[in-house]
Length: 227
Image 1 (cartoon, rainbow, N blue to C red):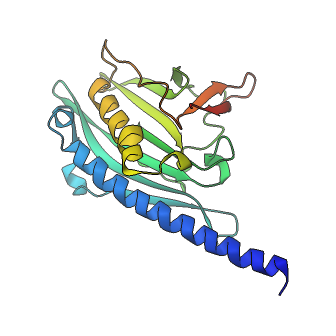
Image 2 (image 1 turned 60 degrees about the horizontal axis):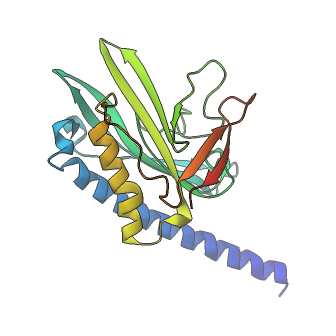
Image 3 (image 1 turned 180 degrees about the vertical axis):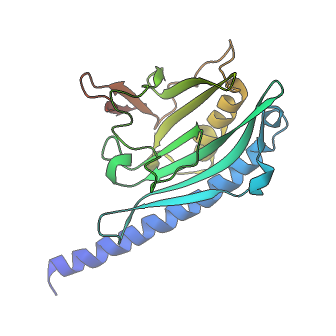
């Protein structure tokens, strides 16, 4: 047998293993983030939308051939409270293995809170360029956290997003320190607008992506990793 034929088998086996591990990670994240929303402190300002029956909304992005997945995403509808008003937001994670969801051409996981559920078919997902010249660019905090603040219906709302190198998630402790704890921090301090004491997490959190806007290329960033 030719070496190319053997390489094809090895490549398919590897991709299958990656998909298996991504599916397992997705299940763990859905369970742990659902538990987080029920945390006593978090629940004061965020609650699962009862109309969705705690259902995560899953989405997949195929490659051009339709034979491979570039990205997976899961979104959880939340009621975000402020005073006597409520609005729906979606806590999500998006695992991008290839395609326009990978700003540095390396596998990443994006975690965020946006108005709507991730939908690849509706072109509503984390993809780069992230915005065009006519759209609001995010405010970058410590080069690692993107934030957008909107006014509407007599209420402000803030959306946020950060990204982690997928290979930086190797242990249960990595999931806690790099996803669950930062998400809890953000849900407690951005409700839906940042409190005065808001601050980003430790920049030494390894695996966080640092974004620097590329001048003249709206929505594109040079990317590096926090070590």
